[in-house]
Amino acid sequence: GGGGGGGGDAGGVDGVPGAATKVDLSEGRWAIFCERWNETLSRRPTASVVFFSGACTLTWAMTFAALSCTPAARFALGVPEIAVGWLVMRTTARLRMPLNFAVAAPVSRLFPALSRLKISPLLAVFAADADTKKRMEHARDQFAESLPSARLRQMVRNSFQASEKFLRWAEGPIDKYGLSYFLTSKVSNVSTLVGATLAARHGLDVPGMLSGWGFSGDLQSDSGLLACTAALNVGFTPLHFYGAVAAVSALERFGGRLWRDRQRELAEKQAQQLELTEVEKEHLEMSESHMAAAVVGSVAFLTLFLDLAFAIYIMRKLYGSQKKKGDVAESSDSVATESSSE
Image (cartoon, rainbow, N blue to C red):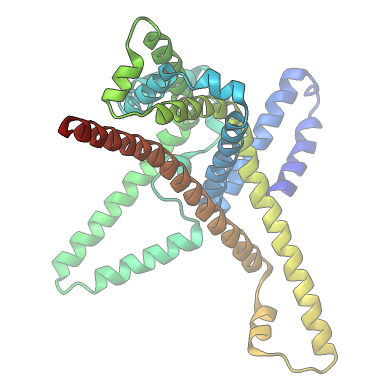
C-alpha cells in the first residue's frame, strides 16, 4: 500500500519541469519518504511504533555483539571513564528535557522540512489505529452509560471530551517539533556521554567512585560497551525509520499474497462441489485487508515479545555482573572473619 503510493508520487515529483536539480531531487526524496511514513503511521500506528522499536533494538544488538566479540574494542571501551559518561547520560536525561525542547524550536524553524515527518505516536504513550479508536470510544460510551447517576455520566463524558481535545491539540506541536526534539535529544545524549567521559579523565578516582556507587569491575566494562553502543546506534536512526515502513509494506504484501492463494484454493474446492468447513467459510468471507492486518499484527506482537526478551537479557546480564561482585565481597568477608577467629 505505502510502497505503491510512494512510487506514483516519485514519478510526479520528477516530472515537474525544472525539478531535475540536485537540491530539488533531494527535497523530493525527503517529501516522498515523509508521505510514505505518514501514510503508514496513520494506517498502522501500533505496528509502525513496534517495528521502529524493533529496528532500534536490532541495530543495537548487532552493534553490541560486534563490540563484545572484538577484544580490542572491549579493552578500549572497558575503561571506567566511559561508564561514568554512560551513568551521567542516563541520570540527566529528564533534566536535559527543557534544554532539548528549547533547542528543538529553533532547529525546526531553521529546517522546516523536518516538520513533514509526523512522529507523534513515537513520543505518545499509546498509538491506536482507526478501528481501535472506534472500539475504545464504544467502550468509553458503555462505561459512561453504566454509571448510576446522570450527573456522574455527564462529568465522565466531559472529562473524556476534554482529554480528547487536549490530545488533538498536543498532536500539532508534537508533530511540528517532534522530529527536531527527537534528533536534538539524540545529539544531547551523545554530547553528554562524550563530555562526561572527557571530564572523568581529569584526575578523578573513577574506579573508586564507581565502586562506591556499587559498580563492579565487570559492570563498569559492560557499561562502557553499553555507552558506546548507544552512541553508535544514533547513526542508524534513518535505517530505523525506513525499516519500520519497509516491514509494514512487506508484511501487507505478504498478507495479500496469502489471501489470494487461500481464496484460489477455496474457489477450486467449491468448483469441485466439495463442502467447506466452518473455518474455510470464515476464510472465504475474510477480506484482503483483514488478512493483511492479521499478518502485520501477528509479526508486530512477535517483534514486541523479542524486544522485551532482549531488554530482560541485558538487565539480567548487568544484574549478573553486579551479583558476582557481591558474591566476591561476601567470600572475602568470610575469609577475613575466619582468619581473625584463628
